Length: 320
Ligand code: ATP
Image 1 (spheres, protein in one colour):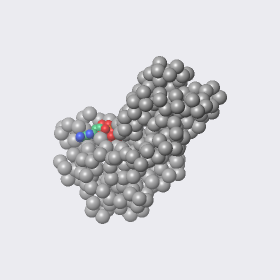
Image 2 (cartoon, rainbow, N blue to C red):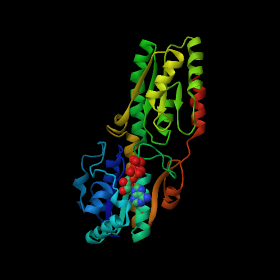
Image 3 (cartoon, rainbow, N blue to C red):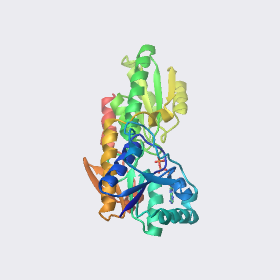
Image 4 (cartoon, rainbow, N blue to C red):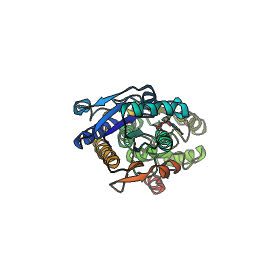
């Protein structure tokens, strides 16, 4: 394993740069060459690739996004598209591939490994934290902190104006960001796709709180559970309370990665290179109970990450 390619794919997540830096520097530390592939699988197909050195990753550890850029590529989902990418594997002499991205990117990597037998190690980089086989994915911690910052600010105005605030957060089909940010931000209600909550139930809780003298409430809605705007309109209709809706959107994905995400990305990126050098072929790097581990990629792509329901119930108890 002399020459390794690295790409970022799918949605960007804060900490991807720290992962790229770790991949490049760990590979060079072991005397290997590293080729950076731009724009994910799209650049892989188009040969948008070039050698990286120690300087290519200088001054990026604190930057959000990804210096390699990312993209979604319809063409890579076709055998013809992947054949073009394989041509570039040969042309650039790649003997292994590190893919930093989400579950879709991993399915692409698995398919490519099956067809062309090129060793692939995936690194979970998505704010959604929806990848099985790992407790955390790179970017999740930063996204949660971004949401908590927003909750803190909204709480100031909520207390002053005696209003009900609805905050819609990202996560696609997963409620992890909503749950973690809701618990950390002290939200009264958290709506997640894994445990549907009816509007009537939320209104009953709001009314109970109002009778006890509670004058403001914060409701976190995961985008996969409901639309924040619809939830706000229905609550207003049923309770008459003044409701305001904030959709945080891409604010959650931006900004400098937290120390936790930088450390996680550094450990995972370095481990990915180590795994390729040690002859591992179709794997993902994960973190389980604080340990960096190697997980079978087939198991990851076939599985579904379960939400921590104990944490969800705890958030309910603490927000009474
Ligand atoms: P995020 O979680 O941030 O959305 P992701 O990696 O899940 O990231 P996707 O758009 O689902 O993002 O996937 C990224 C790319 O992976 C796709 O644009 C496509 O090129 C490739 N891909 C996804 N699924 C497959 C598949 N089954 N076979 C081949 N390639 C795939």
